[in-house]
Length: 291
Image (tube, rainbow, N blue to C red):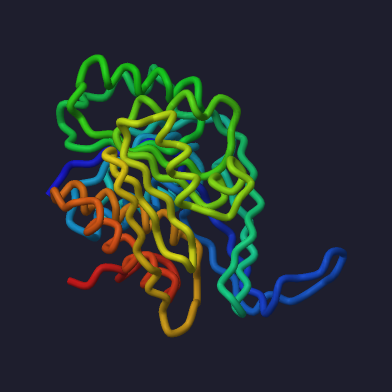
């Protein structure tokens, strides 16, 4: 199995389950509430760890009870957190999530008072220990320096980059990685059309040497090989959609897992869609991968 380093944030998620999304200026009761660890990169690592990979997280936490909860959760999934930076000032990022049990949709309000993992933090890492690097598309200026650093010192080390939403200067990162993992949200905001194939083809004109992947919810997943081969795999919805939170992160883990196993992109795409479908049918990530 591969040794994978993920760079991104970890959050505390406060999830309120409701029977239908509330109207503005209304008061409703939550059916249930749970508090758990979140964050795109750490979610992806949690799935990859269950798939048998050795996973390490690079990020920032605060020395406080909420930070300890996050560390305990990551440890329970065998995620190595020794490379993370622990600050004494600030507050662990918190995501307040409204989860609609009728259709599994989630609405997120995010608050953070915490500095990002920096290039100086990243430089301290011995990258020779890893077979794959995965980054969240955030903290763009510092991430650009990290990617350039990797390409200079370890040009053959594969890198995947998750692009969840538009950010200033985000496209400057695109040429520095081997696999781009786009969300439907980003694709729609970039093209203003509801067509993942056209989006990927447009992207390939700008970055022809990069494998491109895009999750598209109920329509499954799409990918574009560097030779122009367009791939599509249908979704595998569960009998009942229970929790879509983290489905995209799970999809990304499926792609990374498949490529780490030297699968072709079509096989990895199918694997990713199956994993994401299973995630939508259960609460959280525990037991997502059958032993």
